[in-house]
Length: 130
Image (cartoon, rainbow, N blue to C red; front, side, top):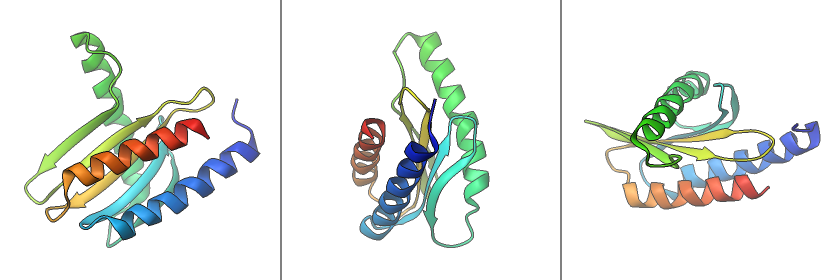
């Protein structure tokens, strides 16, 4: 069970890292950290993105990824990428004993996928270790 203190520490770390990613990676429009059931925990964004909506939709995307990976016998998914004509979204799983989280990074077409992928994976590992 997650204590209030540990959830506060998770939230503070997530807010700082989300802001850092938004500042450091060209093209990043939003970083939203949410629970597996779709509630936002922390976020940083530019523009008209609604973090609560991203959190809710990412929950469904994550669930679909889990089922597809299970049915395909490829193991637990660590991240899912959605491509569009004007950018991409990467969804990263954060596996903790006390709470399962999702990191969503939204980038426009100027974003570099390798940078987002690397930073997102490092963020997920750090959150899992907290």
